Amino acid sequence: MSRPPRDVAGALVALAVRLLPAARRGWGQAMRAELLQVEGGRARLGFALGCVRVALAQPAALRALGHLAATAAAVTLVLAGGVTYPGARFEIIALVAVLAALAWRGGRPGLLGPVGRSRTSRAVRAAGYALACGYLVVSVMDHRGPQLLGPQDGLLPGMITLVLYTVVTLAITARGSTAGPACLLSGIGAGLVAGLACFLVLPFERVLPPLADGLPGHGLWLLLVVAGAPGAAMVVVAWRTRSARQALMTVLCAGAVCAAVVALLGYGAFLLFPDQMPGIVPRGAGPPAVRHALSRLEAGDEYIAGLIWGCLLVAVLGAMMRPATRRFTRGLQALTVAGAVLALIGAAAGEEGAAVLVVVATLVAGMLALFAGPRGERIPSGAGGQVGS
Image (cartoon, rainbow, N blue to C red; front, side, top):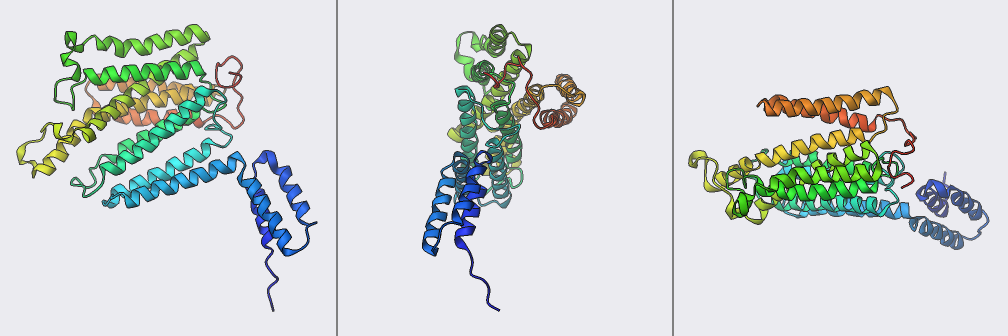
């Protein structure tokens, strides 16, 4: 029994209909109805190709193709970039997949998207994507060739941090976010200033004198900048918006950006000035190359600590940006804030292990608070966010 001929034109029109956004479903119905009126195989095929071309020209389809192309380019970079250690290759490719999925969700209606209508939201989201791409490039460059420390490559903490920062960046710049343009601009600007000042006053690579040591007063006045920049941003936003929520999110945003800047500058110094790496481990730890890798791992401890505190602030920020319209959400927000306070107390008391466990629990509570609201939850009027801004 012979099979019926395949309707290529019908399959192409069906594909075009699937590619159309929800607002253009009427176009899809018109395409199918018009195809029934077209006669001749060549004419039907030409009409179907025209439908596909129209569907691909829609912004949603272009974004999807862009995400697919960027993901393929990133995976190609990892495979062809000389990352030979299987563990590092798997981790980087997994990170690419997660970031691609987040970017796709960021373009669809929901908690993470679409991006807000203000230029500030679009600029912040674009900068977040650029930083994520930069991290991937640096990770590939840093893991080329043999990895002397094997699974101790230190890649996983940075991956987790990047994913958390990306999730909150998408949420805070989404159309339904409660964070207004003033909050974003002031918080990020203050965080950049405070992060640079903090990096200068910290011991360079953990054991060397601070880079600000040659400044007047050994640069101790920069500590005022570290504390004053986020505080000033909070006061300015509180005065402009008359909203305590906006002020709180501003200072949390500034702190998270500050921690990220310190870590990025510290790890960037590893790559830009490898010969300046101090010898921290004893000479009996192994050959020179192994000692250098171990010293770098030890020197990065303070920057890992910065990433941990940055993740803590990101968790609180994620919890606070969600309107507390339900008792469950309010409970998660309170649990997140309490966890952050307990983590700070534990770290100050020297209980670092317990503090890290509390940070992990706080991250879980913060992300649950961020995603706990029901779909379609409306932002209250006067929240000062993207809606109506």
